[in-house]
Structures are given as C-alpha cells and as structure tokens.
Image 1 (cartoon, rainbow, N blue to C red):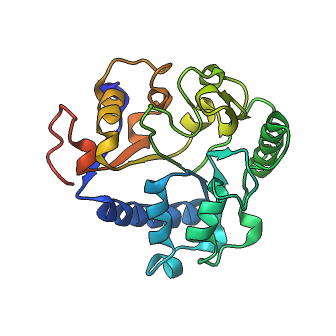
Image 2: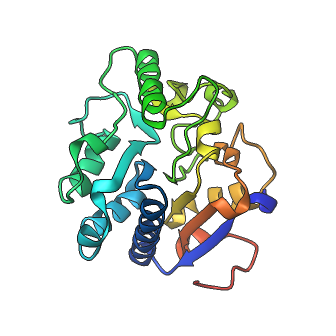
Image 3: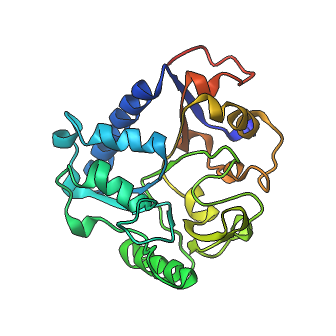
Amino acid sequence: MEESRGDISVCRDLEQLSRRAAHQWARWADEFVMAKGRFTVALSGGSTPRALYARLAGEPFRDCVPWSKVHLFWGDERCVPPDHGDSNYGMVKEALLSKVPIPPENIHRMPGERKDPVRAAFEYEQTLAEFFNLSRTELPRFDLILLGLGEDGHTASLFPGTVVLHERKRLAAAPYVEKLHTYRLTLTPPVLNHAANILFMVSGEAKATILREVLEGEYQPEQRPAQLIRPTPERLLWMIDRAAASRLRQDLGGES
C-alpha cells in the first residue's frame, strides 16, 4: 500500500520517538485550539503510546499543552472495568490523566465494564453523536487519532478475520475476537479514516516483519487490518524506531 502509506519518521529509539510524538501533539493542540477552540484526540492502548503519555505528563508538556481545551476519547477498549489492569483507560489514567490538569468532563472513555458489549458500543456512538453534533449519516472528525500496530497486523481492535473489518455504517462496534476469546470495543474503519490526522506509533524489533508487510506488502486487509487505514497521504504519519524499521526494503534516509 505504498501509494497511501503517508509520511514516515524514523527515530533512534522509543525515547526519541516518544519525545518527537509529544512535540507533534503539542503543535497540533496549539493549531486546533487556535482554529476552533478545542483539540479532540482518540487514544490508543499499548506500550509505545504509553511512552508518549508518560512524556506528555512531564515538563514541558504538562504546562504548555492547553489541557482545558483537550478532549480525549478512545480508539478501542477491552471489556473490563476502568480500574482493571487490562483497561486502556486505566493505563492512560495512570500514565497521563492523573498528572495533567485536564477537566474530568473532557474525558470520554469507552464503557468497557458494561455486561453487554454491543450495548456499550451503541452507548459510545451516542457519546460521539452528541459531542460532535452529528446527523444520522455523519462521521465524527477527530483532530488526531493515535494508533499502534500489533504483531498480527491489528490496529485499534480491528483484528484479522473479524466482521468489523467490513463495517461501513457504525461509528463504534463490539467485535468478538476468536483468538482472544473475548469481545472488544473499537471505533470502526470509516471513523478512523475520517480523522484530520492519524499517527501510528510502532517500536521494537518484534514489529519489524509486520510493519514491512503492512507498508510494503500486498494489500490484504483481512489478514493485515492496519492496511485499512488509508486516508489521504498528507493526513497519515508513521513514527517508528530503527528496530521496527529494520526490515523495510525502501531506504528511508535514516533518522529524520
């Protein structure tokens, strides 16, 4: 999918990646707050985004980001209570939310604790519709969506072989992931692709093979769901470290 893979920024390691991503976050926050009075972000779980959240919780970002104007949503969530160790919300709360002056009403988490995941997905759709003032057929337009990449090619909770890969009308869904024997909550491909900016963060040698397949391999989104993320190239940015980039065939010109 090289024609639509967007810009790629190769960093020395996870530390440099998280620092560069934090500076980019701060620039986008200033830009969107200046333009429309708020900055809307859908967050990702995972160890690489967690490094970004920890960076944002420290100086200078804790004080320079206009947190009172930042509204946080989630790209996906596990079907667990918010205080569970596997909760994406819980991870973000520990790494970031508990350390920056963001108003509680600006935090819009997915209700992973609901007993009925399908109902939880409908509930989150209502949250999105109300916040973004959507008509029945409109999509929310996040200023930024953060995404990671799993070793199996999944992103958000779009896993290989799941029916949500073909979803075109819903804003949020609750796919059953057979290999994990559980449901997940996730934003759908149309919502992800509609964002003003999409930032993939990928680090580590364990991701090198799948990153090459997603970026340089044949378009097979049923097996590599991250390939479904195909906005216009100028809206897609990959920040990857050297270890993750080590198997890419194309010369990226070193660290940028």
